[in-house]
Length: 408
Image (cartoon, rainbow, N blue to C red; front, side):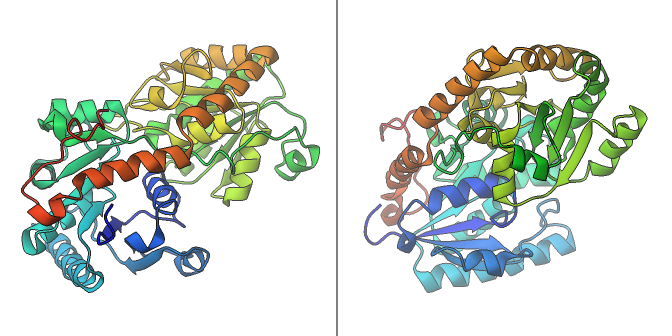
């Protein structure tokens, strides 16, 4: 980036809120020069305390509801309010480029700003929000406008890139892949610690761990249905679930139905320190994701975090999760639509300590070499530099990854 460039980042989902898209932006921009960006982040509980802990320039706004288009009165008012706020902010800080953390609402707000201020913008695309091109007529129209005018689309996986090209007819040269990464200094292996495990109420039991939002596509219901078979082979097994979400009540009902009260622990939303402890002390990490309609798992940053902590992982063969592991070496990808298909490999891994240890060592090495944030931040900076000339030529031009040596 040139010395005159300034990126305005639109990020409704940003820490302290948990979530892959917000974590991606946070980990990326805190490794780039703080004076080269301004983050327009969403308002949420704990934001003021969080923003006092870092040196990024963050402004907080209440973003429009992404589920509503601009025809709906409430949606129109939200987009118009945000457009005015963000335009004033962009002019005030002298922004030369806009980065939209998601397609909606941030991408459409960037589109509106480009029409008014002629600012080039790029959009981070995560996969699940564009799978199947079936958002409804109005939202589809909005998304296509966003993609058509964007200087560049940054896809989190090759799978997401393929969706954009196949389902949305985005030109190949307009899309580049920048994988999310992992902080391999924060997430690293640790020896088994009886005190930490007792604080988690795990004791010496073999522990299967899942971390993430409790959503249908995560497949936790299938994992719970698989638990009775797993318990038959491993009677003292415990399934630890970290996170919260709309599926919590239904999952707790399944626990009752399957009589799993002694084998499942809901930890809820916890702090980063506790999450790291969970990764380090579990025996197997499982993300049993599956497709639900057009909803997919875009990548699975939790898989990187678990592997960085030296743990074997098992993920669903759906969406972009296969790009977050090295199948057969650091973990397994399987069809997680059936509890029977899921139970068998979980049992086999829990009963094979040597294989788990080998996968854990391979996972640690693989994440350090391929997904450490320091290297990925440098790659992202080259992508941003590739669109910087557009700041002088206007937003009608398109970024070409091939011309910049950034082919996916």
